[in-house]
Figure 1 (tube, rainbow, N blue to C red):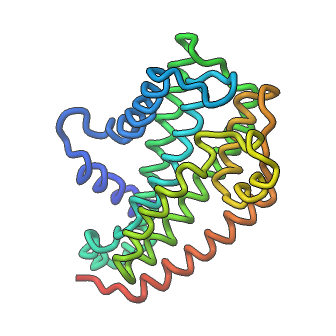
Figure 2: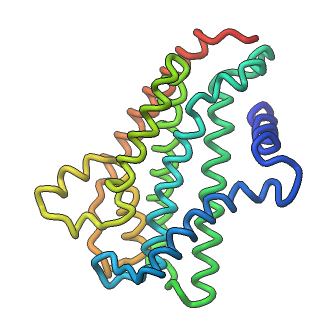
Length: 249
């Protein structure tokens, strides 16, 4: 815990510096992206094909995307710039990934909580109907993002091509992640296909908890748990293998 705490502080200072708002960029960055998308949707008077409030729909959708995508993005090629730290025997490869993953999860969570509380306070969003489902969906997305980050981070150590390929895949997954649609709006034959993606289950669960009876959410808790645990096991195995390959400078 001391090692990861120190790496967290180093990561914050390296990425955001000590000037201006400093640490606050951790959640200002994802918050600005979500607000930007919300502003564009509102300016275009987008209806997203339903009567659901545009503010609630955008915040729940884009916040969930930022959570899992940023975890994987930040873990890609994370070893090389921190390789000198591995000279210290207490610092391991998994510590580097854990620090980055925790930073991204913290930033996305603070952004989501702040935006939700702010818009509820000014009356643009109703409060969530079932907070337990919201938290459950968010935890699933956080675990999935962490496991995905371990996999991408460890594989990118083998080849930089993995990092470039992942960014392309991430862009392709964005419209399929459930951020801009509800599964129930799709034709039945496409619902089964899109539900193979684990992030869709998390977004559906989150929105099911938020909108309650206004939507029919499609998610499978058993599938979510098994997928998360399997991907996490694969990620930890790859990280362990990467630790054996990397030599401290």
